[in-house]
Length: 217
Image (cartoon, rainbow, N blue to C red):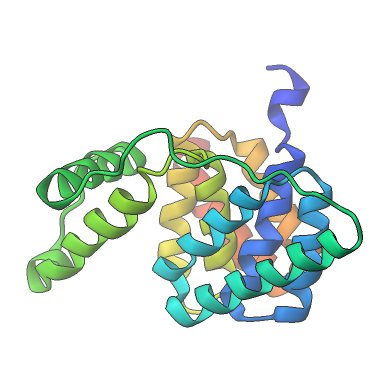
């Protein structure tokens, strides 16, 4: 494979610290990461999509606070004469009701690689509905941010949150189901270690090792 194809793009790399700092509510470091990300070529829409998606992993308060910080950064940059690319909106209308749930179920199955089922979804069917309708439906149907970027952002968010190791491992696998390679995911781990922190990097490293372990046998 071409070496360039084994590297994360500059914008993919820039999304990861934004996602991680937003997940833990570190506004000072998020501010710097947003500024650096926009300098690296992220559009306003790219950053906004990640911070909206954050609500599914860290809750509405962190998402709302992070979006407010993005508005602040964009305004400060505008006052300095910087006009950031607005980005684009989804190319199609997001379905609603049963059609949204069906789209979300199809997206979830594609990302995971199989139909998702288990005791927790039998015990609490509502959580399965919310995952399919809200996360894999309403969010992943928005194609103005590609799935690889969404999964890298998710990995970054979960790596920053202690206690989410099982979900982090799942999304490491989903990232690779979008076509990201083992080398690219190793680069993502290195990015988290260097730009977010050792704890985040270590959680990501252990999760990736567990995902790659079956292939090494």
